[in-house]
Image 1: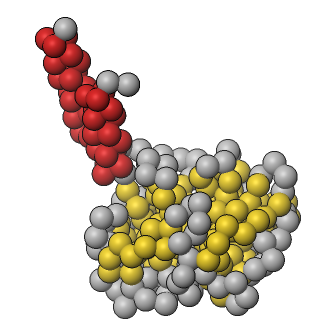
Image 2: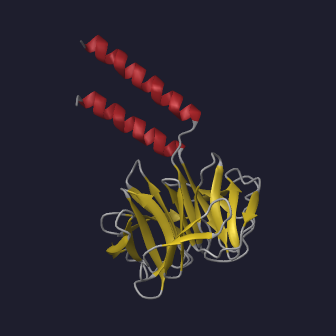
Image 3: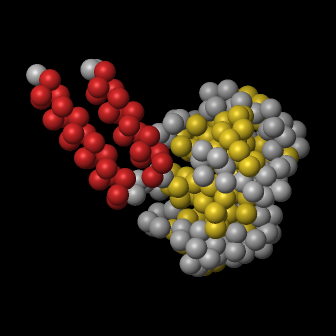
Length: 255
């Protein structure tokens, strides 16, 4: 690939990543939906921030409806508006971690792992146990990552093979994460993680599990659920297109 085309591709990826959004649903905060700056970690309330969350160790994931997140609390599945304008409760299933991929909603509670019926909020299918208290889930690289937030193996990053219905250890993050939030950025191939152990946002290497500090969220503790919305804003998409058109014109002039 020509150097200027490589540069254009990098610009496009960077612009799309910046147009994406990392959400945090804070534990025990019914108005605690925040957007985290992925470069600094700083948290900003998303609208009114309504989540209806009233307990700790909650999950968050993208949903099957644009502009809506799946969330969890001690007694049910939530659908939370990304703009923080409201949330609705379905069912009464207790679940700590959530991830939605391939039309399936996955959940974890203590050392249990299962799928959830999105219409009723009820437990659907029990899957292989991770053998540890996985409190954060995120899909990427064709696996579901699980971050252990308590007990044996605290801070370990695990991987679940959907086809084989089996878990494997990737490595330890080096952080004693507690009440974990986990999300995957497909553009940068990194995981984001927060926890109740402090108020920082971290990035994790999905190949090794090792954590690197991004920065403080502004909270003394950042326990809760994380979800990454990879869809770029329309304005960002337009800028990318204009940039590529400009580079194409430059290439023609060079010829």
